[in-house]
Structure formats: C-alpha cells, structure tokens
Image (cartoon, rainbow, N blue to C red):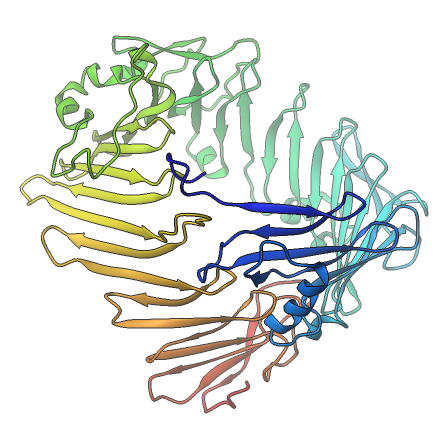
Length: 575
C-alpha cells in the first residue's frame, strides 16, 4: 500500500503449476509504459528449480508459460538464453553443480561447484593447526577425508576452495593463481572461538616473528568474550573490557595505547548507548563483577550529562557524545536552556504544516510520544569547550520530520521534511544560520511517478532552490521497461546522459553530447574477455577529442585491476 486512501498500491500475482509449485510471478502495470512484468520459473523432471527466465513486459494479466519463453527471446534482442540455468549433481542431495548466467555468451561459462573431501594432493591438502592452551601449534596435515571441501570455479575459470570441518567451521580458504595456492587459515579454540587468521604470507611458518608480522590474533576471557585483538604488524593490542552484562564498556586501540587512553561507552537499562568519552589510565579497567547502567535524572548528573551512572567509578578525561531518548526533558538541563527556543519543535523559517509533515503526539499519553526514539544528541568538539546540541522530532511512522542543531559557527541547522505514504522523501527544507551572517535556505523537492494503480514510486525529478533564486532541476530520470535508468538529465536539462546495459544488467555505456564512455566485459579489445563481471576494457571520448581507453589485466586473486596498454591514440569503436 502506498497511499492512505488505498488508491496507490502494488498489485502482484503468483501463479502455480499443477503440482502446486510457484510457476510465474506477475507485477501488474509496473513498467513506465504501463505494462506488467512477468517472470517464469521452470522445473526439471524431479521438481528442482531449473530455469528462471528474465522478466518480460506484457499487457496481459495472465500469459501462458510457452508465450513467456517466446516473448523473452524476442525482448532480449533475440538472445536464445534469457534465463538463469541451474544444473544439479546426480545424487539425492540435489546440490547445485553448475549455474549459467543469462545470455548466449555465457552458455560455456558457468559457475561450477564441486563437492569434495580433503586428501593429500596439493590442491586438497590442509595443514592441521590447533590451539595448545594459548599457543598456536601444527600437527602436520589433516588426515584424508576429515574435511568437507567446496570447490568453486567462476565464469573465467578462477578456482577457489573452502575447507570446512565437521562442526561447520571454515578452516581454510584457498585461491589458485595459476598453479600457486594462496591459503588463509582459520584456527579455533575448544570453545569455537576464532583465535588466529593466518594469511597466505604465513606459509606454515608459525614462529612468533612471523605471526606478529602477518597474523590476526584474538584472545578471549572465561565467558568467551574477545578481550584482545592484534592486527598484522602492529606492536600494540586492541583491548576490550566488558561489564557483568556482557556489554562492551572500555576499548583501546593501538594508537590510544601510546597515550594510555581508553574510550568508554555507557548504556541505559535498555542497552541503548547513551554516553561516549575518553578515560586515561595505565592500568586496565575492571568491571567483571558489576553491571554499569545509566539512568536519566533531572539535574546535571554524571559530568553534567543528565545521567546518573551506577557502578562506574572512573572519572572521564573528556566526553565525546551523549544520546537522549524517549522525551525532550534534556532541553531543560543546565547549559541547554539557552538554546531551547531554537531547538524545540515548531514551524519556523517559512516552513508550514501544509508543506512539511507534523510531529506525532500521543493524545492519551503525551509523555509517551517519543518513547523508544532518539530525541537528542550532544557532540563534543575535541580540543575545545564547544558542544553541538541537536534535537529530533518524528511522525507516527518514526520518520524524522524536524531536526534542529547548533553548528560550530554559533548558529543553527534546521531541517524540515515531508514524506510519501511509503516513507520516501518528498520535500526537504534546510535552514542554515551563523553568527553575523545572513540566513540561507535550501529547498529540495522530489517528484515521483503519479500513476494511481500499481505505483512503484520511481524517482522522476529532483529540484533545488536557494533562498529566492530560480528553481533548478538537479536531475530528471527516465526509466526503461525493466525499471533501469535509461536517460538522466541534469541541471535544468542542459545536459543529459543515456545509459545502456547488457543482458545481465551490467552497465555497458554512458553517452551524452559532451562525453561517451563504454565498458566491455566479454567483448571489445580487452587483454582477456571477462565473464565474471570484471571489466576487460573501457573507452571514453570527450567532445571532439580522440577515443581513448584502457585494457585491464587481473591477477586470479580478485585484487584490483591494473591498467595495461593504456591507449593514448584513437581506439577502434569496438575496443
């Protein structure tokens, strides 16, 4: 439902075959042209999902499955494979063996799954690491047949292996670069806690110097809570301290350790974060036997925060932030009353209740109006005595309708919002003021499609107005029959771009009168065609300049591409 009067909604229909299986799914009149979109699911002879056809526009409420097949091939530029094809292994487990992406170009490039067990061969061997108390040790390799191995070969033939033990814990991930394996091991203690992550550079060398340089290390207390973490190459530990309720109270990273500094987080009775700050100490705080709890009070409370803290006997060096919930009484705290007039709810600065949404008020229990919501924050600017206080007001659906806050220029930031029935932004007024400066007002308006029935609420236009200046159209979108952006105009339609996609919905081109860019995956003049989503080459052309481009080459470990053979001269249009 997308309107309170029930006139805007999404109408969908699920059809079933004679065996009660979902057959085809129809979204009625959902396309920009007013057509419906239908998708078809086919099954193999033993009832497993076999072919899932890509969505097809149709004017009919019901369309026969055979007609969906015909229309799909026609709609997708006469491609004979506009479907996802799933093949299963020949066993009663019905595990997926291969999955073919849509498109004729992918018919010989599936993602393959092989279900194996570990053996002693190079690709399927696995070192047996274990925790001997608090010490990492290795006892050779796992005995053959002790681990499950899932081998995945992607569309470009890149192989990866995942080794899992009988408890379901991932022990090893192995990627193959040519013939060279790159192994990442995961080591657990007897309670199932992850104690070590050993990257490929370890190479079975678990001497202390190697672990300090490359390994991720974790340490736990008697309640299986992580209390220390060491990152590769770091000399200092990341430390964590919990209270008796298992909530993280203190933490210290490697840089803070150099300053003997701890960051603390305090919570209320509902476990909501209320105070953050910094504490200085050379000793590790201890809270194992107490529950730290914050409670709102009417006076200044703990460090003038408006909270009283139970079982927290540490004096903060400084505060970072304070959160307030459930009501707006914090505006009456000492230091906040000066700003109350500008932070309380109301329509000001040209905002009216006809243009912007109003705050929800519980008539029967007014004090429960904002119950459970974040109503205010106070942020401390480190190194100064300045604080930034903010207040938030909500509608009946929990959307923020007004937010008001101090800024660092001794002024205020005020925001007013209006939403559609489904919660999409409809209008936004931002008012900025600063001491000694004129007030600035910005209005953003969002326009969605206006179909009465079956309305997907696609964003059509965004406009902007500064003070009393002329209205500017920031962007204007046109969609194709599949709901993808087809054209986008910017800045009062001075310039617009067209977007093109391949059968897998990968962006293939952006074109306008000033600039054109084309992305090539399994076509063009790339060093190697890519079927797994990597870009093999790209070209661009600016104005009347020559066509330029890049060819990309990838290592087989999915690291970032490295531009190769950068073309400074004109490239063929099919590059």
